[in-house]
Amino acid sequence: MLDIQGRRIGPSHDAEGRRDFLRVGAASLLGLNLAEWFQLQAAGVAKEAKAKCVIQLWMAGGPTQTDTFDPKPEAGEDFSGPLRRPAATKVAGMRVSELLPLLAKQADKYTIIRSMTHMNNAHETAAYIMQTGTLPSAELVYPGIGAIVALKKNEAGYKGSLPPYITLTNPLGRFSEAGFLGNNYKTFAPGGDPNAKEFRVQGIVPPRGMTADRFAARRSLLKSIDTLAAGLDAGEMPAPFHAMDEFQEKAYNLILGDARKAFDLSEEKDELRNRYGRNHFGQSCLLARRLAERGVPFITINDGGWDTHKQNFDAMRRKLPILDGGFATLLEDLAQRGLLDGTIVTWYGEFGRAPRVSLEPPWFGGRHHWGNCFSAVVAGGGFQGGHVLGATDNRGENVRDRPVYPWDLTASIYQLMGIDPQGRLPHPQGCTAYVSPIASGAIASGGLLKEIL
Image (cartoon, rainbow, N blue to C red):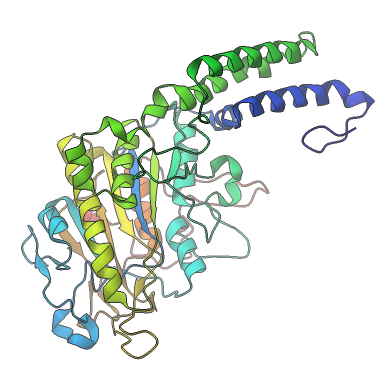
């Protein structure tokens, strides 16, 4: 006989199998295993940190640095293309793309890192490097920074009613966010479009017609089943069933309680929603602010469409105004609410784009992959604003001053989050794994970003 997980139930395991059937079957009444998820996440003792939260703006595909935060109009049209009038910013000497006028006004709140480098031009590998802050190896498949933050915050006693690592709104792909930490530390991606008239978070919002009364009835049934299941062992193993109550409460809270309200953008004023931009990215930025307010430690906004091999400038005219509205309003909104000092905001993708424009067919003004040098933006949470760190050469082809490696950036984020970059990570096979590879001393590094910390 097989249970619903496909395991054979023999005479000596019959009671255990029935318990599993009842427990998993009960969870399926809700259509999700959030209760088990919360149980797996519980642990730890609190730790102080300068920053409480990270909002990572992930530009999937690799955004062009030349057309965003490192304009090169003096290099000529072969490099700048038609975007040859960069905008002066609030900070003297700092220029950004002419298509980012709102971000130009917020330049005192962020620092541009113009000398990011890892020399890799493959999407999958470069995404892994930027998201984990490590180089790939045959020995260790590293977790992403969000998974490590979730682990460490759980160890420090994270008690939030929302998962500690959330991606808006779809998973990143290209690499495993949890790496060797395992599925317990995968990101929670709600799916859906926050700009939709009715934003339905997959796995949280109950199906249409599922009223609070109907849900309460199912909850009552679930408790009855739990009582029956606990009785199978007649007091021998009561703890798991008693402990499950706490995690079921968190699951219910996500479905019908206060946690669900975090995803309800209808609570926001139309004027503010319009400033963020009535689009997927803009409303995701607003949702990220709401999650940061509720103490979620790591939030990624997964924004695709930056792989601009073809017709790059047409894409920039579409995407940069959207980026400008969402990113600039996020910084301003966080600052006005007193949240920016405790919230790190980052912007980057897996690499940059080639400085020289490919005018020939079939590219027609495209830019190809470029890992030699590219830009990142950091703000809040202990990072200083109003600075430019590092520089590229006159054409933007190579780093001229102060190379910054992905592990330098991630180690600095860990430091601000109160996580020791030289600390150890648990590994299922007992391998030696550090929070940041700079702890091993076996990797080239420019060190922590002390100039802007």
